[in-house]
Length: 231
Image 1 (cartoon, one colour):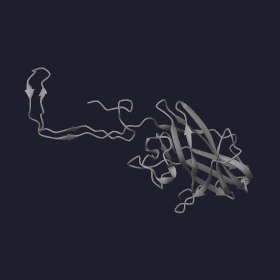
Image 2: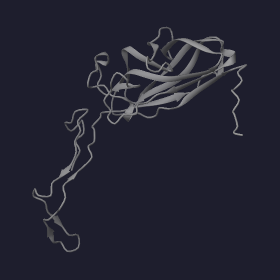
Image 3: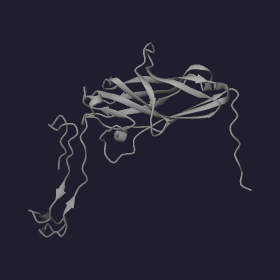
Image 4: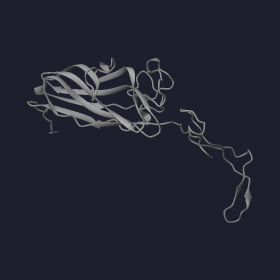
């Protein structure tokens, strides 16, 4: 069986699969005997595949410093790349931001690392989990095929010298690749995918590598909590 490609007429999101029905014109030839066999007792349904033009890759980058201090500071730096299959459009990214000690964080913003004069999106804490900060872009970013763009998350740090901040990029634990309101990362291989309208063209991070990496920053006076040992 041949799986159609986009160049061969398939559309992005098509889900071809192969089914075998034992009672519909089935026959097989023995490798050694060359005898024809027409009896099979079981039907078989293959697992479906999904045709996509391209998929992005998410990559954490090194921060310029891991020392936490007061004022506006970079908390997470990352790049998104598109492969040779085509352009990628993305419109949402999310992070779990954990703190310890005296530090407080406010005013989360997402910037293009090359041009930090204007933010691309404002970070909003999720109502059901305030440690998760979501960035919904009002205008989706486009990554050209075989290229990448680098981004940075910034926040205002208060009382940073005595604290610790850990920011982790969040992927989606989902059976399907369809994006929804609670998806942590949203992208599409179709440009102009109407990100604000929950378009069926939108996808979550199921097919995206690689989330889960953390950036950790420590204040100069931060003392980790003592680890209790069992008695």
